[in-house]
Image 1 (cartoon, rainbow, N blue to C red):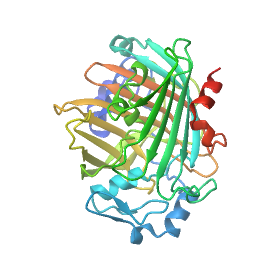
Image 2 (image 1 turned 45 degrees about the horizontal axis):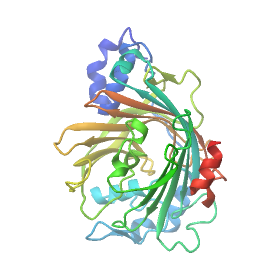
Image 3 (image 1 turned 120 degrees about the vertical axis):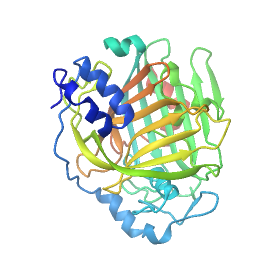
Image 4 (image 1 turned 120 degrees about the horizontal axis):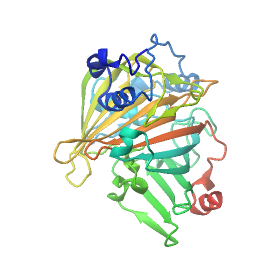
Length: 375
């Protein structure tokens, strides 16, 4: 176990073993004595039952193909490419990864730390919110399976959030409809309680920080940005990294310490995927994703984002990934960190997921329903 007292002996090794954003926040937490770093033997995780069943059923390795505009064809459900041969195939594995039990939600504390707070552990501001997700394609756990009737490959997923605290932003709501055709822009709407108006967000708005935090809508789940025909992809390497273990139950309190999470760590093999966005009007020039290699879920551990000058600007990492305790299904989460490496600001999300949430129906993606919940 690495602690404040002995961390000086291990920091050089940790720099090589940790994904860069993990190292930055772990080093800070260890030196301040907020966290320890228990390192456990590599775990053998059970395969997700329903995920693997639909992957075998639709024989994705034989039927799925990518075509010249980066589009995926022949996919119905499960992992498209169990053994990806190039960066584009891996990117589609990430896009189609083992998502959060078809429909889910989580309650979250959104903790903002400025540069001073990152050194003192003092929270600058806190929000509370509730987020709903529902996937319309590739469903394998909750009926209807494998696709919503009448969808016909149109909508990929819907997402909504409602802020419930504090009072000055209570009632802020957002609804996003993500379409599957790669060059069809998503529809994103937000309700702003201060002016009592519904606003349609543009493509540029989805890269803006959410309520002054370090999280942008396109950075949800490390990368919510859609694969486009402009992008190019490359697998830079496969490498063993020290990463947080998967949990089926939330770690006991205190879970958040300073601007860190107290978790156990293990060595796992990850793909390093580089995505060049090739769009001068977009916020970033490229992203680098760190994706699970071994258990064919395409779970993502972290992402790095580079600005239009090529500087390492932002990162987001799932410090604690959550799995359904009964089936090991779904890439849900207990905690993640967003960091702005130019300003020194960071945002933690302390999350409480609801697997296969029966409330994630069509009404959960309406402003009327969300405002009723905020009351």
